[in-house]
Image 1 (spheres, rainbow, N blue to C red):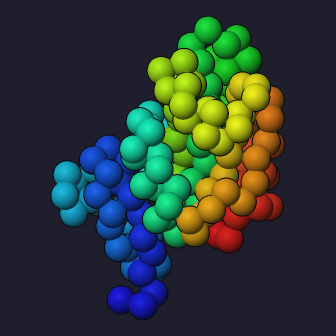
Image 2 (image 1 turned 135 degrees about the vertical axis):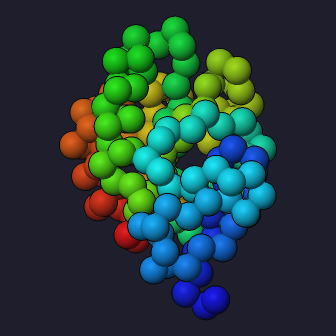
Image 3 (image 1 turned 60 degrees about the horizontal axis):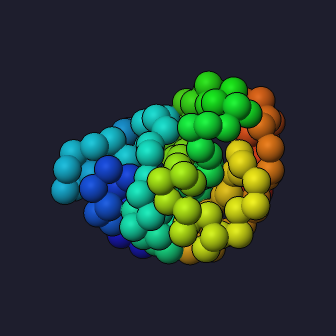
Length: 146
């Protein structure tokens, strides 16, 4: 399966191999059965984020946010809209910086909301501040290898 992409299940953290030509067919996790790229935004814990960030070939856009942050809450519907629009080519997730402050420190998050794009085991781009759905989509399309 040389044309396979690695995708970490954002629900159970299992690493899956998915043929590139099957991405639009709605692949599911081989361990828990969750759809891997259905356009839904997933809440992450630090361990799942680390595993996905390290292993995934598919672009993963992570929103670093907090429940008390007005701009974060204001941007949430736009983030969900962009996730639905760009699937299955990229996946979107969120990490609560209030619940996981060490992750914020690790990635040097100084202000929220902050969008960080990962692909191929590394951070490839970052965007600060609340932005509308079209700008989020354009950010991912311009920075990631889709």
